[in-house]
Length: 292
Image 1 (cartoon, rainbow, N blue to C red):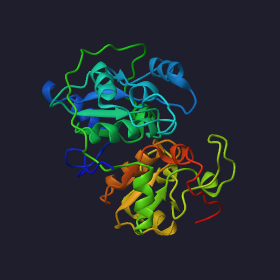
Image 2 (image 1 turned 120 degrees about the vertical axis):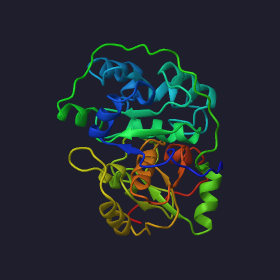
Image 3 (image 1 turned 45 degrees about the vertical axis):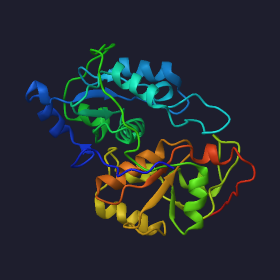
Image 4 (image 1 turned 90 degrees about the vertical axis):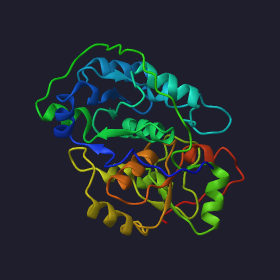
């Protein structure tokens, strides 16, 4: 377990289309670096890059979740293992991220890939925000997009790990044994052990509560306000102001749930990046099915 204070460098971790457009029209030294983290589950790096080339925010570089924000799968660590600092630094630098300059991540709409990038960047001490509603919100506002590749100047960002609380399976086990609040950010049917089409074992970690990450968005892909997030936590049987740990299938939706909670001022949860796909790698670990 790695423990840190968490945070996005002050203020909300989300930025609206209107605020971002204003920042991009301001002084050059204050303009954020834009990074597109287009990602489709199972799509692979080529599909992700092709989606980026088909249309992105002007000047945005591309960061691939599979190769820059995850170590290669191994015997443990899950489907998207926690990446090394060297891997993340190389990816951020290729995308043009520089020391002392703000960075905004976005993806197509739901902010899953962007949330993974935000969580990892801030874990490594890089202040970052996410464009609420992603490319879809930008286009809905009638703002321009660019096609093809952008090759930003090489960045010079340096990383310092430990900015957030990172859990492994042993720490999650201890967290639950101590009565800690554990949230599962996958769709509720996968939590219950139904319709599992991704991982070889169905179910959830005993003691977890179901808080599907994508239910924390409105119909336009923007994050819900605080009252709605708190209501969903209560509905899940969780206490909003109690520190939580969160996991999903492979550490993507968990980062998304963490972003949604932090954006409305709730305690930033610890994240089990290995998540369910790592948990079930050890057949001795317990598995529960059905509702919480």
